[in-house]
Length: 132
Image (tube, rainbow, N blue to C red; front, side):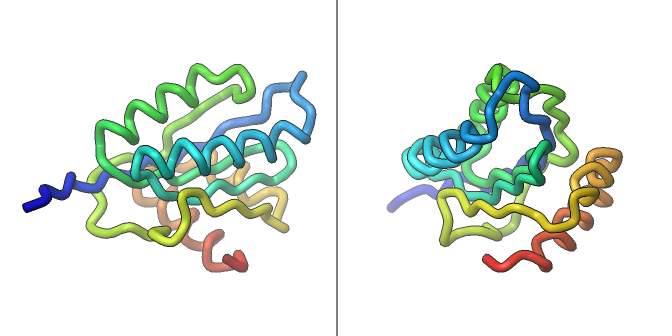
């Protein structure tokens, strides 16, 4: 009998480090898809041209280890966890990492000022406007 680890999620925003070229975003997304698949992590990465917003979901230990790697990644600055906690079911089970840009350039800036349930609600609103 296989034991299924409890799901955990982290929602964070960060800013692309000033010296990083925009081309690094595709590099980040490509590598994340590979690593997330190996770690049984799924999620969504949104980029607005300057800021990232990412929701990660999977086994708690793997998700927390990954968010620490992201915090230490020099390509990101101002990593701010907006929400974290247990998750009843995956939102993005079909994606090791879904990726989208967002039309509303202020959406992530507004989300950055929120936390907890308010941040999660804002994230869900942004997601509902994306074509995934």
